[in-house]
Each structure stands twice: as C-alpha cells, then as structure tokens.
Image (cartoon, rainbow, N blue to C red; front, side, top):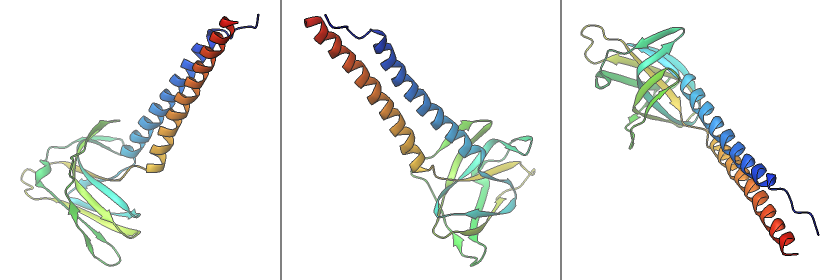
Length: 185
C-alpha cells in the first residue's frame, strides 16, 4: 500500500498562505508609514522650495505633526489656510484642485486631512507658500505635501499575497487528492 502524505502538509499549506498575507500586510503598512513620515512639511505661515517629479501631490493640513524632534498640535482651522505652489524657474502657478474623496490619516504620530492636490507636469524645483487667511492670535499650523503611492509597489504586494495563496492552495489540494487516491487503493 503506497504511503499517504502526512496531514502536516495541510498545515504547511496554511502556513504558506498565512506567511504571504502577513508579508503583504507588513509591506503595505510599512510603505504607508514611510509615505507619511517622508512628506515635505511646512510651518504656516512660511514657504519652502521642494524638488518634485511628475506626479499628483496631495496637500494635507496636519492636526498633529512632528517637525524635527518637536511634536506640533495645530490650533488653526484648515479652512483658514491659503497655499500656493509655483515652479521656481518659470514662476508658473500650479493650481490646487479639490479631491473628489477627502483623505484623512492618523498614522505614526501624524494626523491630518487633505486640502487638495497639485498635478505636477514637469520635473523641477517648486516653492510651496502658505499663510493664514485670518492670523488673529497667531495660530499654529502645519501643512504636508506628499506624492501618490507607487503603483508598482502596490502591485508587488498584491502579487506576493496572490502567489502565497496560490502556492498554499496548490499544496493543500495536492495533499488532499494524493491522500484520497492512496486511500482508494
């Protein structure tokens, strides 16, 4: 009578599936955290020259932020913040577009909500300038500018999860049929 594969191979299939999903979740979370911690930040009122590539950049009002080793809690109202972005070389203004779906985040010590987005069509140095519309009482405010997520990295994480699910499923199905075939003999 031929040997049946051990039931432990079912466990192996489940472990492979679980490993793939844990890796994909970890990679997604770390990429999200990295995205928010690496955004260009500006204390309002103020301006900052930032190198930008062709992409859509979101502008966020940060309720809680960190600049250097200092934690900042904003006391300003987001509706009172006025920001503009212009190309340093050509001095052409880049219009701030409103987002169809607002974005909010509370991650890795940062909490914010979207003010709009800038579409950058040309690589270059851009100056972000922000001010308070009503600066009575000198409120504290921080804005952050960040690019969109890397679609290649997102696809890679999805592919990792799908491959792990497929390999784990194939392992379990193979063991099931091998055990069934050997049982019938």
